[in-house]
Image 1 (cartoon, rainbow, N blue to C red):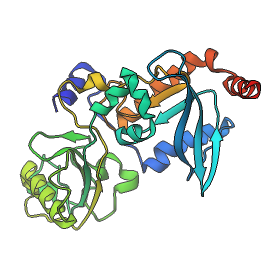
Image 2 (image 1 turned 45 degrees about the horizontal axis):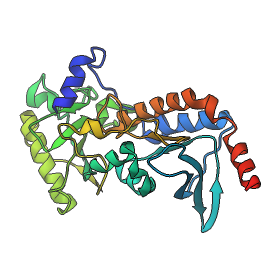
Image 3 (image 1 turned 180 degrees about the horizontal axis):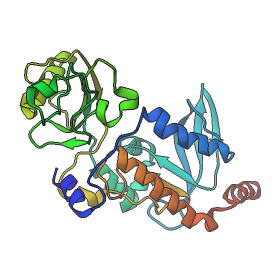
Image 4 (image 1 turned 135 degrees about the vertical axis):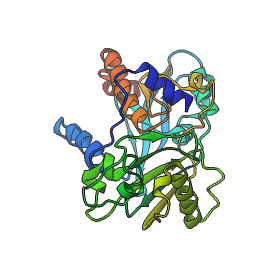
Length: 304
């Protein structure tokens, strides 16, 4: 919480965090994929990266990525490129990055970041939970559309670190005529909640929602959804920022993206987006030395 509040204190233009006006697939990913394809790029789905191939001795100079061993439907292929970006979360980075690369401090530090379980809980209500102006009457007033706190919210008095009323912050996708708030609450770290059944998790979150907004007392959720992820964000703790790697790495042609990498935001969706922009900048900075890498690699294989 201190990290979040410090960010808002230093970023004078960040007093409001807006949500996507629709689903991430439509409003975040689709514009990116459309842009890539319009520029002649190709996106390969259902293709797994099994191994990063490289030359040189890890920990020393001259280590360079030479390709990726990929598989799709049981068919293996080695893909070679001028630049390689590993856009992953912490558990994914630990699995994919070659273990010998831990000879580089930049990669070894990643293993000090420990993934924690995260649970996302959605609760639909027959009224407006975060309405503060008109008390209980305003909470249950369904005649004037969605009303309440239109922002991403944080609280130190609940087990969920952040929450928002999706019917307010992203109405195109989540506002439903005749229905009220759709609260989305993120439990992280969620170690103690993981063994519990979904119904009990939803009930506990609802109890804490009412404690934050007493005017909503007496309302019961009409629907709930619980999504558990065993390892996702890394465990936030004092001093952890020093373990976050830069997007550029000591291995030639290799770049990192992901919310765990070094950037201003915490490990979050916003942080992942910013890391991608920073990574793209690092690739562009290195571009003069990257061009023609595939051709040079092919020539070296022929010479050998």
